[in-house]
Amino acid sequence: MRIGTPKEIKDNENRVGITPAGVKALRAAGHEVIIERGAGLGCGFADADYADSGATLGTADDAWQQDLVVKVKEPLESEYRHLRGQIVFTYFHLAGVPAALTSALLDSGTTAIAYETVEDARGRLPLLAPMSAIAGSMAPLMGGFYLAKYNGGRGTLLGTVLGSGQGNVVVVGDGVVGRHACDVASALGAHVTVFGITPQYAAEFERRPNVRYVLSTPENIAARLRDADLLVGAVLRAGARAPHVVTEAMVASMPAGSVIVDVSIDQGGCIATSRPTSHSSPVFVAHGVTHYCVTNMPGAYPRTATVALTTATLPYVLGLAEIGRAHV
Image (cartoon, rainbow, N blue to C red):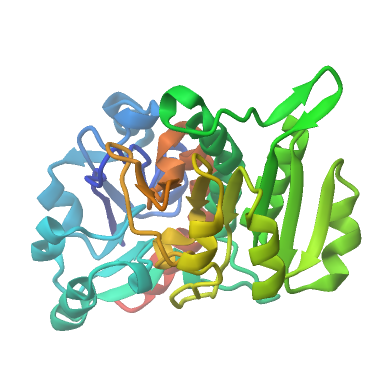
């Protein structure tokens, strides 16, 4: 089968859908791979690395014209013209992007396979998990950065000062994002409250220092947000728009200069005041609260993110290529 990987064009998106190691594996299985020139430069993979691995280098058109296109992020409007009924394997997050993309996919007859909806035999989401882990780990770090006074924050350090934990972090959601956000915030020394809907997780979360697990109800969340320095939105409804579990009134009750990092934003956001932002313009202020709602957070660390993502996706790419070859 012929497989193409174009360069990502979303704002500051430096991940790539296939690494040189992935090219080698695909070539060993008898498939052709076409990589757009420069596709891997943002995460440290030179064109020569791809050529040495057996890929053919070409233009964006060359990469998109193949039977199976492997990407990282959803096609942007300028890429809709490339949709022609091929298989496109990438994150789509259709619940959180303009409806025009869904229309373009349907009109072109494209077979769109979304990383975030692929389930394994146990019902888990193995292609969403690695990026959820990175975004969750990033959330306290981004929050801590914008809590600095010179960034408009209230001036609270998330950390330990002479043995005393500083900062109140609220994590809404107890999945992969919530676990990683909790791990990092707790390790920094902050006081962390995790709101979840799976009470049997409580003991696991509370083994971490300075962590409380609380049943997620509107009343419980509202009470805790009144003195929160950082709120991390980590709610997932697989394949669907995230519910707004934090209302605008709750946001308005938060201290001036506090920060929200809504990791759920790629599925529409779980906080009523959230709206998508980019790495070039990552934050806005609503009700005196700084909102960080970047829709491709892991793109900030493209080397780590690409390796983690492609380790998970490559077996599926190989499987799709074999299925495609069998039907040629």
